[in-house]
Image 1 (cartoon, rainbow over the protein chains, first blue to last red):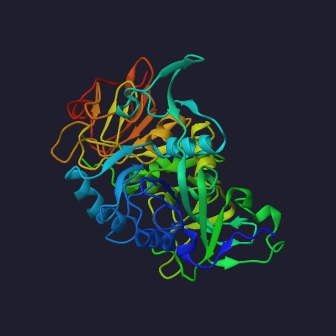
Image 2 (cartoon, one colour):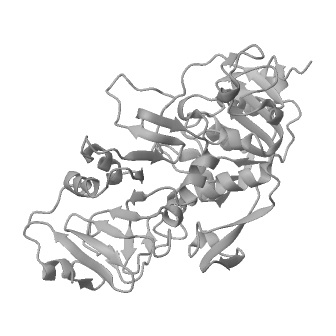
Image 3 (tube, rainbow over the protein chains, first blue to last red):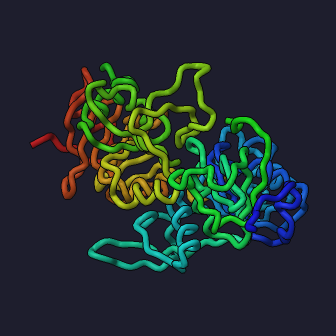
Length: 226
Length: 214
């Protein structure tokens, strides 16, 4: 019997090693796997490379992980928020690396990794500082730059519901980076609020087929903290 | 001189959006555009975080915490709305399916180059978000911005001095003083001026040559 549901956050994060590339879903606080991020803080892995859209707010979650010195580098499109004090301080002091990636290029690099595509050409960033040093080519009279696939050792994502096969649904704008990140890591861990019986989720409603998912943990939590 | 207010700039842009377009609005003044589309006109607003069919801001107390826009503000949906993930949302943007993107800017050059994400390559914490994807992928790009900086320097320029967001992508600019088209091979063509603004005054506040409509 296939059963990807684990009983605790600790079990969900077992085996995450130092130096891992960790894809972290969410856009702002919506669809952000807060319980798994807290679990990663407890779990202790360090020297991490975190791939995520935002660099945390205040001193909780990803910001706390960074403040504890556990993140070597972030790959990020928008490391700015109403309160990005931790990242900005570490960055200014040279204590964290930043690879700044346009948001669509970030999503597409992850998609490529999940789809077995090692690199692709895009018009995004042509002529800007973010294209410097990258291979450029012309197709049909337009300039493009080459971007490479971005794969994780681990992906931490949030869904709304799951079944024991690891099928996931999403809620509202909570899909964002989660479904694409689910395709592009060796170990994919999902936190969800609701566990359903196999067959209860309508096939059309499943945003991420369980084939992509390794572990599911149910967490009681309310709405995202906006 | 009676410059256009931010609401007037947004209203002008909104009235220029034809029915049926799919439109992405940037953070800041561009967000106001959605409030001014005539109610009888169907325009679809897309948000980078995978919302297609974004409606007005919710009333206080009616916010759905699972439903935000790219500026991370609570939103509502219109009938016919749909959700996708980020990969599909940006495929929509990069694949040329967005009819119009409206963004703010630090500078716009007469060849349509846009600078709107950083004021230095050595920013303390640079952030780009989806601006470069929108600049490269949207079918048209309009800019809403003040005509000059707070200290009076022109934002319409011959060549951008700030790091670029995209090349030759801006097609129209709405400022507090005028509406201008960016015409390939020609540059800034003045379509409308705020009450009490004349061509010479506008030219004096611009860093590139302006053209009268032919």
